[in-house]
Length: 422
Image (cartoon, rainbow, N blue to C red; front, side):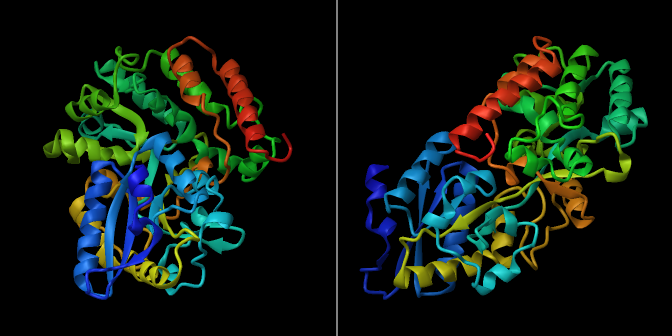
C-alpha cells in the first residue's frame, strides 16, 4: 500500500502514453462485489470517451481501510477520487478540511434529496451516491408466513404473536447469529425509525449528551426486545455459535422464519441458494404505533474528491462523477452486483427481476416511510454495543443494565470526539 499511496496516479497526472487523455485513479475497497462493480463502471466510462483514463486502485475493508483513508487525506496522498462511507464515518474524515465541495456541479442536482444530508457538511455537498440504499429490519421466509397464515406485522406485539405461532409450528421464530457479534445490534439499530417518530429531536439531544438509551422510554425498547426474544425462547438453539451464513441458510430452508438483519444480506442469500431467493421477503422492524410504521434506512456510500485533486485532474474527475450520476452507471452496477434497495439518482430504475427483498425495501422509499439510521444523524456510536447486546440476547445481562453500560460507552466516545455537552 505504501507503493500505491505514492504512485503518480494517486497524486494526479496526465497520461504519458501519447493519447492526450488525463489519467486519474479511483480508490475503492477490495470487497469482491465492490471491485467488480468499480471495474465494470471504469471500463464502460473509459470506452465511452477518449479524454479521461480512469484506473482502479483498492484499499482494505474495515478499520484498516478507514485508517488508510484518513492517513492519505491528511498526508495529501489520496487518489484523485475515492469511494467511502456516507453519514458519521464521512463526517470523521473532516470533509471541510480535506474534500472539494461539489455543490455547484450540475450532476449534484440529479441526486435524491434524501441522500444529500448524508454527504454534506458546513452547507456544502461533497459526494454522489455509489450503489443502492438498504434497510435494517427483518428478513423473513414468505413460504412459512403463507403456510401459517401470517401477515407482515406493523407493531412489535404483532411480531411477537407471529413468533409464538412460528414456534408452535416447530420452526425457529427469530434467527440470531452471535458468532458474528455485529449481528446482535439489529433490534436496536433497526428500531431507530420508531425512536425518531416518538422523539424527533432524539438524535440532536443524543449528540448533545442530553438523551440516553437507559432513560428514554422508546430508545431502550431495542434492548428490551433483545432480552424478550431470549426470555421467551424465540431464537434458534445455536444462536451463540451461528454465523451470518448459517442464519441465511436457516432462513432459505425454512428452519428459521425471521432474521433481524440488513437487507444488503440479500447478496449473501443469492450466493447460497439463488433458486430460493424469492422465498425471502423483508419488512421494517415494527414499534408500538402502527400509524408511524416505517423503515430505518441505511444509505449508499459516496464518491468524493480530495482537495489535492486540481487542474486537469479535477476536470477529469468531475466528468467521471457526472457519469456515475446517470442511469447508465446504475444499470452497470445492477448487472454486476445485487441491488439491495433503490438507487438515489434521478432516472435510475430497478429492473423487474430484482429480488423480493429489494422490492420490499424500495417500497418504503417510494412511500416515504423511511428515516435515516442514527449513524447518519449523529457521529456517536459506542464500540461496545455489539458485545453488550450479545450478553443481553444470551441472558447474561438485563436490558436496563445493558442500556446504562452502553450510555457509559457512548460517553467515552463522545469525549474522544471532543463533542460539546459531554
